[in-house]
Length: 185
Image (tube, rainbow, N blue to C red; front, side):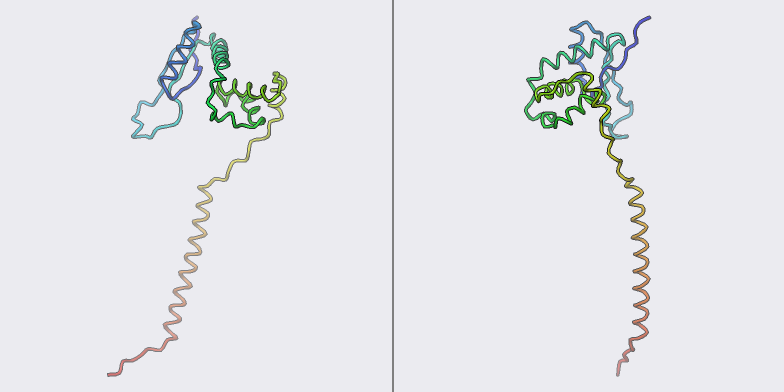
């Protein structure tokens, strides 16, 4: 039975997907590039920031593909732009990158490991697992702004009616109290 192709990485740029596929093919890893973008016109329905290009490899080649890219990135870590965002991360943030591989790319993982090693840390799998268990809880989600605006709208509408009603009563009272002037011929 032939291995099924599974999504290895997702891209928004087809040229980058082709470059990674070429790098993997140098190591005899078969790849398949699939365009998963919507069939509808993005001008009609709006474009989504979701990556639409899927680079697929055979399921049996997934571990080897990860290893090939990790080794490639490790060889090119010295070529990082000095303004690269990961270089400004704190040690705690770098450990977060290492401990959460699902949220970060392979290059960011390799760079974070190199930076932590450069800061004097030894990263064993046990250390990474220990950090994952100590990970602080997620920050609380912000309140639903839609319902907040609805409540504020009701409050403002109430006060608008109160002020309107008070203004009408004052106007009516002033009309009663003010004597009418009669024009003398």
